[in-house]
Length: 214
Image 1 (cartoon, rainbow, N blue to C red):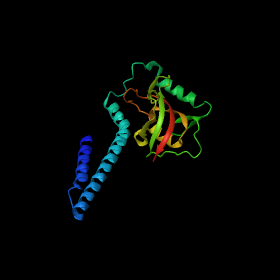
Image 2 (spheres, rainbow, N blue to C red):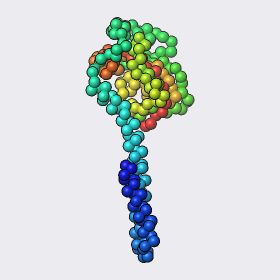
Image 3 (spheres, rainbow, N blue to C red):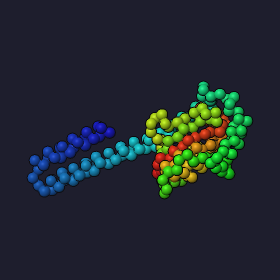
Image 4 (cartoon, rainbow, N blue to C red):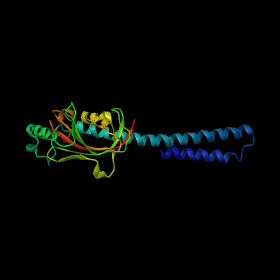
């Protein structure tokens, strides 16, 4: 990219210098046209560079998911005590959570509780939206397996690429909302799990919806 811009700068310089040696209107017109084309090409290169940076940011979470899928399926991280994450423990957690104040349970089994309401009229995503969020995810024993907070910046995901529980929950939220979302394994990573998340695990997320891009 830098080499291309350097060459373009040389061409512009040559074009400007040429004005001192030409005498006809036709030649002046040709030089002016050349300079205009070079300026347009330079602008296009700059815009393409910005587009590539934006595209790389959008692809980052997808590439991360691909890397996770390529790794070991359902291998728990070293700090997870699987004796606390049995089927019985997960079932008991879901049953108890459903009875707590402020909890809404949907027909799919997804449950959520509003932590903070965003401003009225905030934009809501669709399953096809790109969303910018802050989030943390934990198992039912409180062991955190993922979070955007340590980086100090929210992350951007194409919503359709995420787990079914998020695809269902996020369109119910609006920009500025913060929810606790409890995802049963059927709406999460299923029977087998993925990456560092074992199979058949209920996942407890805190999600802050920062921005929606349609």
